[in-house]
Length: 444
Ligand SMILES: [Fe+2]
Image (cartoon, rainbow, N blue to C red; front, side):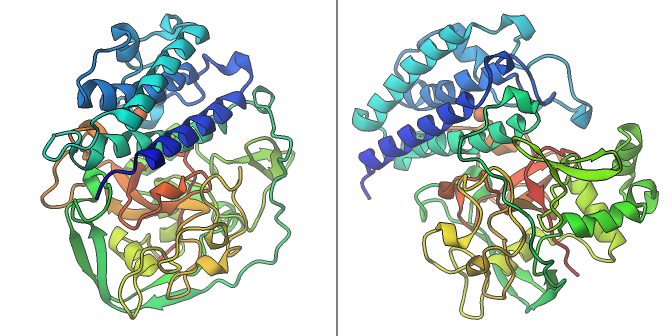
């Protein structure tokens, strides 16, 4: 099938406009700050997004000359995989740049503009779809750069989340979704034994990342899974019951983290004058009890153990989300294209919404919010499917993280672009990384 150049250009422009909008949310003084120690300072990302696109498609793919070797190297890499200190963090930025070696914003923007100009020209006119080419077969590099930027937008948002409120410009139409809804019944749904697709054959979809291929399916025994994500209200019971003070609920390495970092509650929660609050993107809210709790894998697993349950495996998530008595679906709700009626994703809101707000997005079994309103932790360690091959356009995308310390997350959050909503898409983080828009539900 011929590549649709105008669709690729439109997607690139949409990505760039959205990224610009995200940077425009910030006050100028935030530009060189580093809201999360494990990530780069903000300046890096304004250069990295167009820099990666230029480097991957134009320079490596089409073999055209570079723009500026120093800036291309500076903006090359999003996260340092050699960072083994984990959640303890590390000083300074990666990529060989110390705090004051970052260029001025004018320099970054001039580089970005030139990269944009050349990427758009390549998408519109370049020979970007070359059968048999290591990077350009089926326009792989074009899709890789488009999905890369969309994924980074979620990363930017959870970084912005950690900035002081006064460093962010609240959009005129911002209003936090009010809680004020009745709690949903706590209910587990029985899922019958069956087959779940985990991976897809390269070449049968327009694009898939290396970790999604090749085709793989799993036989899943019968299990039960929560209809709704665990809410702040439910998680508060674990906190009040002393869950953060009892080693029995934690893996030894997670317990060591709880003690060392004195973790006492989810990072998104704050305690002021005896009351719980939720740190939203633009303001502090009284803890919205019916929102999904956002926690690290370590906290999710501890809660599950306390509740006499466990996290679902990746295969169980797939079965609960995409299985049905009549075969597998493209999305939990069926084969219809993702739309606002199906869930909270595609930058639909700045904060999550009460669980169960989108029953139209329920899976065939009636499990709700599987795609949207927060990624969902699974118990599955992130690893390659048998027959894994790296993607030449982005060889380090997955392989650097097959270290046994990262767990698979599935689904989507409010800040996940709709283009990424396909059943085989996988996300992953370290078990004690508390910053992401990730929730969970229990299985037995
Ligand atoms: Fe990146």
